[in-house]
Image (cartoon, rainbow, N blue to C red; front, side, top):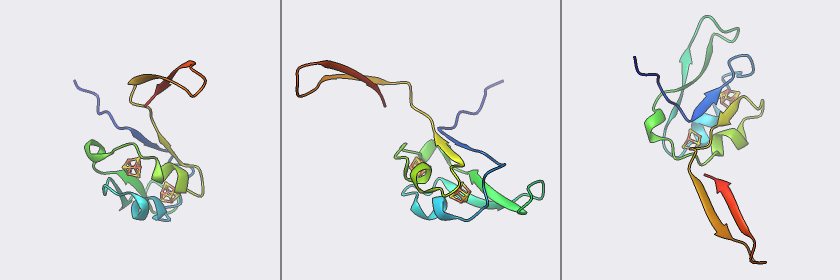
Length: 90
Ligand code: SF4
Ligand code: SF4
């Protein structure tokens, strides 16, 4: 069975369903949905993970540090201004 892959992970214990991440996402990936298992009665869900461009606007905007945007696993190698070879994950 295929495992659903999402680049965005939301900590249900930290999310207060404030909606900030939904508003800052440029790709409309996130939604506030009703979830009666959560103390707030609703929370943020990753509704369209395939549209995520990993910009991290949501992660950087969440006041409760409830969102993590995962690296793609793709690495880029380049030279910095001092000629050092640097490898970074995208
Ligand atoms: S910004 Fe953070 S606390 Fe607010 S809805 Fe999004 S994940 Fe939840
Ligand atoms: S990383 Fe960017 S595109 Fe992906 S859910 Fe967050 S704000 Fe939206």
